Structures are given as structure tokens and as C-alpha cells.
Amino acid sequence: MISAREVADELIIAERERKKLTAFTDAHPDFDVAEGYAAQRLFVQSKVDAGEQIIGAKLGLTSRAKQVAMGVSDPLYGMVTNRMVAPAALPVDLAALIHPRVEPEIAFLLARDVTAPASITSVLAATEAVFAAVDVLDSRYNDYRFALADVVADNCSAGRFLLGPTARTPDELVDLRLLGCVLRVNGEVVDTAAGAAVMGHPAASVAWLANRLGECGEVLRGGWLVFSGGLTAPIPLQPGRTVTAEFDGLGTVSAFA
Image (cartoon, rainbow, N blue to C red; front, side, top):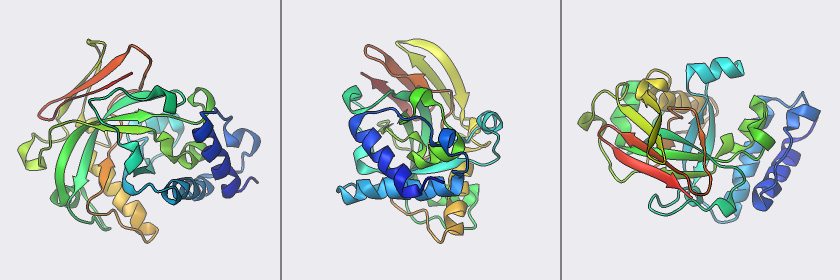
């Protein structure tokens, strides 16, 4: 069986050199999700050792459709560092990424720790602000082809994150389950969604993460940004393409290159 250290080392090189990898589970089918999280911790620690700071977390596979497609019943999670948050007003630096894809999300800025057992209610009570966001995914695997353990090790395809300019408390918005999003590519509507696309309520995925971390003796920390999961299918980001997410009550955020 390939070790978590070996997996992490290959991912570190792949990200630095913009090199696509073959999924580890192809040659090592016994590489499992638990080992994937062990590799993820080492992958993220390499960023911390290089001077980055962990400022939040991201959820993946939060829609039921995606879970069914991947044969799982729970989301996955990765860590977000300060270097991953990019200015929304500037082009995404494609030269620093491999093959980015964009998906709209609802992001939560936590005012205080969220401890287990967590619920939608406790997450909303701990939330300082909600933002429109864009998750710029960037898998280190060729053609985004991977098994669950692979994508977990790859920090859930974390690339860059863009935040919209408008901050709202949950009380200032409609029910987050009903908060609508329109996704456009170069001005043309390509998809629509509502907050309920994420586990029935976007705060439910944040609560799931708090409970999952609690099982590991960790805490979802106040001050963190939590990206609750994609509302639509991801869109490839290419030169000359602008992907815009328009959110009810939260404004607009665009990714362009």
C-alpha cells in the first residue's frame, strides 16, 4: 500500500510544477479515505510550513446527486489557507493552476467556534456573515478522474476562492434554503440553483463539518471562512471566459481569466 507521506509528496510536486497525476487508487486500490485524510493533513501542512495560514475549510460532495454519483452518503472536506483566497476584482492567475473549474457557493464567516453536536441552528447562531463565493477548483488529477480517497488527499481539489463584496447576517436574508443563484458564462445563463442544493440547507454542511471535526478532537474555529459546497456543476475557466454567480441578497462575484 502506498503511504500517506508518498501521496502527499507527489501532490506537493504536482501542484508546484502544475503536473497532472494519475489517481493513486488506480495502482493502489487499497488506498482508502482514512489514508486520504492523512495525506491531506501532510499536504496542507506543507503549505503551513511554507508560511501560509489555515483560515477556513471547504466542503465537497454536498449535493445528494453528487453523493449518489460517487456512491457515498456524506460530504468531504478540505482546508483553506490565506494564499488560496484571491481578489475577486482581478483575473484568476491561470499560470498558477492546472485546469481550473468554477462553481458558486455560499460562504460562512464564523464569529465563534462551532462545537459538536452542531446543528443548522447552532451554525446560524455562530455566523457573523454570509457571502456569495466562487470556488475555483483545481484537481491535481488528469481529467478530474479520481476516487474518493484521491480527492480527499488532494485537499478536495482546493485551488482558489473568491468572495463577493456583500456581507449579510443570516437574519438579513431570506431562508438560506431559498436563496437563489444564477450562473452565467460570458453573460449567458447556464444554470440556476438555490441554497437547498447543499444538503437541504447550506448551514447543514457546516454543521456536518463541525461534527466530523469533533469526532477527531478538533473544532470548527471562530474567524474561519467555511465554503459550504457547490450549488451547481462546475464550469471550466479558460482564457476569455467570465463565469459570474449572481446571488439574491448577496450580490455578484465573477471569476475571469
